[in-house]
Amino acid sequence: MNTIKISKILSIACLTVLFLPACDNEDLVGDLVDEGAMVFISPESEDTGLVNFLDPDQSRLNFTVSMTDEQGRDLEFAPVESIEMTVTYTNASEGTTHKQLLESLTDWPRTFDLSVDDLINLFPDEVLTRESLGLGDGFFITADFRMQDGRFLSGWSPALLDNSAQSIYRVFVNYPVACPSSLAGTYLAECTNCPNGEVASQTVTVTEVSPGLYTINDISMLLFGAATPIAYNFTDVCNQITVASASRDFGTAVVIETQDGTEYNPDTGMITFNLQYVAPSCCGLPGLQLSYTLTPQN
Image (cartoon, rainbow, N blue to C red; front, top):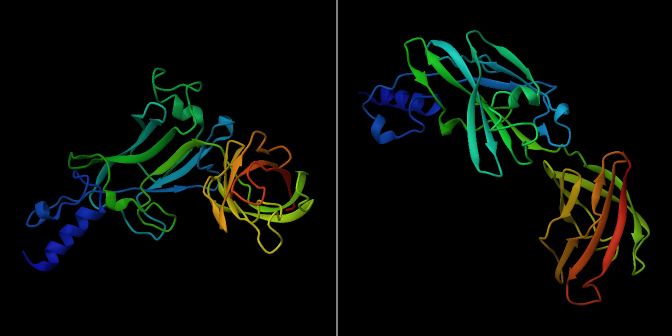
């Protein structure tokens, strides 16, 4: 077998959905690998990207399943009889997974527009109900294949894990049970408790690091002076705000803990910080509490 043919066989094995869950070059050299197929799943503009834990009825799962990617490349490497769209539900509290058939497609492309109840009703009540749906649970949607030659191909190669918007390998969509969060922007910070005479107000910037994780450019209300703002990360989980415990350097480490009352109000867009300094062990800071509100300016 020449080098070109071996290279072609290995490429097919790594980049298509096969019987094998991964590439094992030692087993494949010299063997003819049957070709498979893969889907291209594209979320539409109305897709929420998650199941809204606070308001499940606001969830919309809107995506298109195709066997041609956005650049027109054919992903049906061998004739396909049907695409078996499946949903795997993960119960975060129990650490269990449950897989059900969503629909068997005999023609494509196909656009799905699903509610959270459409997903829940796929599973028996002992597995999932609206009442048992928990924060951190998730729904993973992908495809198996029934080939025209009688083969059934279940799963897909780890080589296809690049599910970015630019990738040919968009073989799944994932909907975590979470809370939407969009707090990035400019805010007016105003003290409700600045015991050491810090500034009464200032403009701060909140930047999104990743979904639900943000950085504020100064969390100290200029406690250390205008030349030394203290940037800190905080998280938003279902309107509950938590300041990260990791410190930032200022001589000795500055560590801030979140106190009761730190929250986000979705009706007003205001963020309330109620914080306590636990380090450094100098300057009268340990135990100092600082409370202020952030009012959105854009």
